[in-house]
Length: 111
Image 1: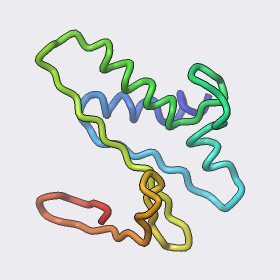
Image 2 (image 1 turned 45 degrees about the horizontal axis):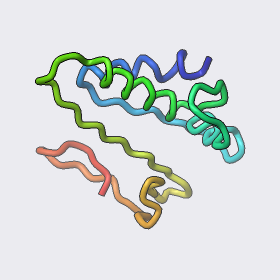
Image 3 (image 1 turned 135 degrees about the vertical axis):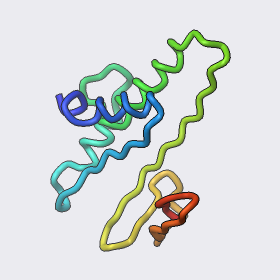
């Protein structure tokens, strides 16, 4: 299974407080979107789910299972596309032509 062999370890690291990136790279038509999203017409638990829904299921299952009432969680996710050297935010389609920046305080970020 693709998720088990590629992204699950990164998700586990995120749950320990680390940052992680899952990157799908390749030419047009090779299945990057399908690998990341899966089939959009199916529901939770389907084998046709992609890396993104599976990783979010693992993150929120971990949060639900946490029994420490003092523990707080902040979940942030980005879904970016680089196409023809233009960076777009797929969660906010109006944000296109974004720039990669670096700051001593913030580190590397997309603006």
